[in-house]
Length: 137
Image 1 (cartoon, rainbow, N blue to C red):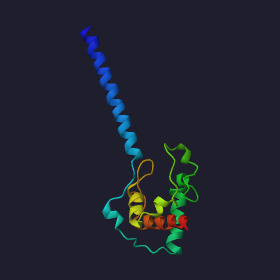
Image 2 (tube, one colour; image 1 turned 90 degrees about the vertical axis):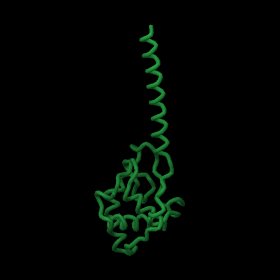
Image 3 (cartoon, helix red, strand yellow; image 1 turned 135 degrees about the vertical axis):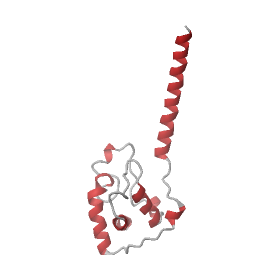
Image 4 (cartoon, rainbow, N blue to C red; image 1 turned 45 degrees about the vertical axis):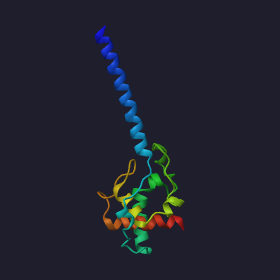
């Protein structure tokens, strides 16, 4: 009888711990994605000209378009496989972020978006940013 009671208590503790873990992970994924202050102040060293925008478009189309979509609306062919819808890259929130903030997000990534720092050079990440900025125009 004592052993059954102990197993029952362990099961309840396990279920409660699992529940808390699920809530924590869900909250972490839905929390606002904010870049650090140092990133906000980082200036874009790559001119937003036809060359950098063209290079950024090539990278975007090979690495980002499958989820973010052709015009950054979050409607790419793989978007439906994600846990939550993507915000459009031309919305007010995006427009209100500095180049440094967006560059930091491209660099760091956040599930489901992979980090760009291992696959793209610093210049390529700035070029992608320059291309993304054309969506707001």
